[in-house]
Amino acid sequence: MNRRELQQLSHQRRRDAKVLLDAGNYSGAYYLLGYAVECGIKAAIARNVQRHDFPDLNTVRDSYKHNLEGLLKTAGLWPHLTTAMAASQSLQVNWAVVKDWDVESRYTLSISEVRARDFYSASTSKTTGFLSWLRNYW
Image (cartoon, rainbow, N blue to C red; front, side, top):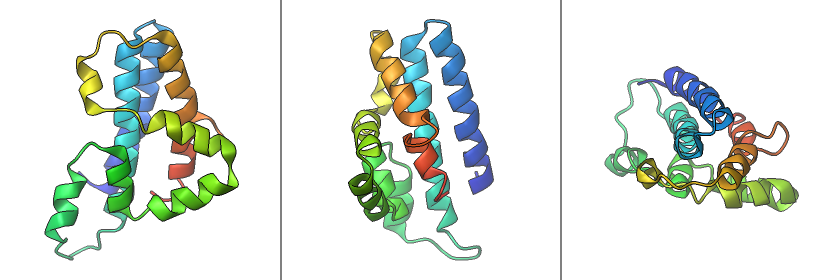
């Protein structure tokens, strides 16, 4: 999968999550939106891989994990995010919501409407949403 496909997948999963959220399927929306965030970060990792380069083994291994903070560090974006959060309280609050997503949420049936909507807002807000910030780097 290449960078462009990961970007497209992130957009599509965000749209899918909105459909599920509007239909009252909060657990499904929560999971898919987290997947959209993960794909976005992985697009940023792919941006750092140069054509014909053989990537470092640790980078490859770390790229296949599902921990959002760890993926940001693999992408080299952690310092950029901490700087941006220092300048924006809203982004800091939004990251605090987004960072708690876990791939194991796919097995959770009890995500509340409030949690799912908060996660959607924290991820997609046009000015300070995490995905809005991330698009500057993917």
